[in-house]
View 1: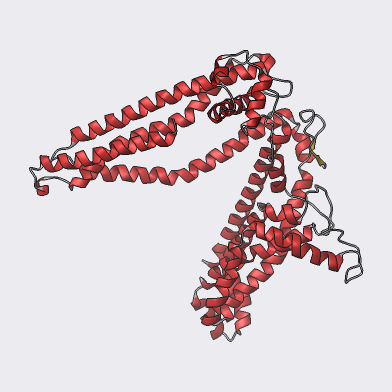
View 2: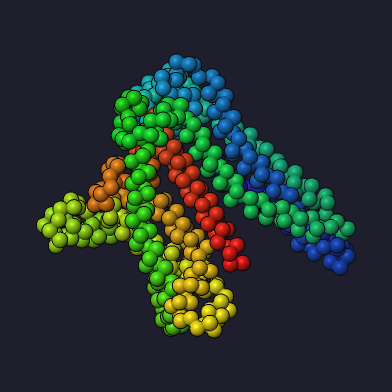
Length: 493
């Protein structure tokens, strides 16, 4: 049964507990709430929280732990012959899970007879065809060990789900009973509820940290799995990117250097466009523009930040690319033959720079406005002009924040995908020519995981290694930004 039904059941129990707890509190005060330590609603919330919180906590832990435990048990029962050369038990278990989920979906849709689930000697080719007809992804040939493991995984999952329902409902009822037994005129319900809410807020604030930890761990584990199948030296020092999905990586060249070069090259071009325009726009809006002009110009400038990146990609593909070809291509206005097609580093870099202008201008504008007016007044008092004050006082004082804005824009450029896919092409090459097509790390992450990805192959797992490399790159960029900000902040404190 769907988990949503279980959540609704717990909420209904909590709502009933709230009503009964509130009514019982009023009764214990002999109908006068002045005889109660807390307001009646606090007693109701005490019952509801004791019903919901333990039940939902166990539900979340169960949903996380059950797949891990079942995978561990099923994996331990896999015969060694079920693991092909160059693969691992973890990768095979991914296929087992997909098969198990696909079988459940195929039975529901009617593409697979439920009687097949009781037959370990079923026709595997017919099962594979039924899974494909049901729209399920089958990435490798379905073998007998995988089929047996999938049936075992499905059986254990169903049993675990049933047990989860029983335990969660029982906890919700037990919590409601516990809260009702505490309900009396002298019980400090308000203190208990407010303390519970405080701990819930702390838990909510911890979600971001735990999410970051989970993302990093998922990258780390899958990256380690990749380097078990592909040499780490070839990945970091290889100068060729040529994945081949035949032969489980044996004929693939997965060197990251061309992708890193394309990422950094396009980002540099984008920053060369965004930083001067964005910074000059911020200086004008904060120092020269009147209030009426600023009230119109700044919102219009920030509209660029709300345009979807796919629209920027189409703009690069249909407008900027052909425009550059008409200027720098064969037969163009300049009479040179530099750019052979619309997709190039310059195309993606220019459009990405336009996209980044609001990031630089808006943040820099806020930072420049935050510079104390007393610094400007002191400069004017010494006889400096407005331009001299901006150049020698305002900008140096705002420099740490401006550096932060530029590095934030750089991080945004490094992580961009759609503009690169449509504007820069998909060619992984090491070249200094900005009029050639190149690609980036993010674009290749998408391409490696698009379609029927076989997670038992290095060609799919390489996406996690690319993501881990990109994460370390942006982390280093942020650390460098903090160093620059702290260094210059001491000068103007």
